[in-house]
Length: 343
Image (tube, rainbow, N blue to C red; front, side):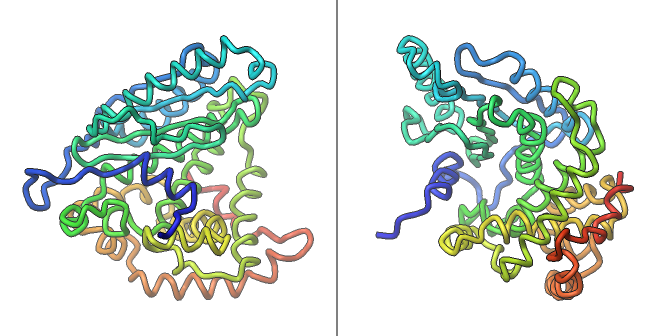
């Protein structure tokens, strides 16, 4: 029996689409694209500051680009967030009891009626999931704010973009085959993660007020360093964007230890080049409403005025052209200067 990598298993279990008993052929799940409200569920005693930071980040982005749903957010605290808490048995028991309650709620929202025991809520994860019937989208955050508080600003936007992709994604073949995670639904893996990385970073750079409760904003140097560094990471991995297309690719890339280099790093650079073609984030975001009508690839061709294969070729040429400059010491990141003026 093949053993799936832990992260792959978590994604499948936390976002398990349900079977379509009694569902009409290719019927669209009733996700909401405008005017939806998200709900936040927290473990007992969750730090109010970090709940507020997380909520404000989601409200800021969704208020600008559209409130999709139904969306439930689970903010999970673990005793290992602070070493001193692990020794407090009463604190540990309270969190365990609270997590059990929330896991049952999570399972109930997804409609499969289990106790949620399959959910792994260990510290250090942040992911989005979904179900098709009943239609629901979930975001789960188990990261500690005491280790990286900035993730409570940029992270919610990253995961919300996955909810956005899900709400707008649709393809009859994907629904009939119960393959919502496949490229038919929301595009190749590199696109799904690449857009989330790029848009979240760009939005945080453009809106320093998101960091008003933290020590400093996400600056241009932070943004440039992340996206520019992603190209270097992709180049040094000596891999190819075409490897990050289908759901099945995820496990294979994890085995090759290049999942981040292809899907996240390479994907964000590819999406940066598509953003450059668009000229603005507003124009870039106009891609999503085309997907329900044309399918992902049809929307890609219409919106970006190129075929997917032509884009892959252009991307390969770009990487070859810039490979030397981004692998020098210090790296020359001038290729991404255009992002400084993108709004």
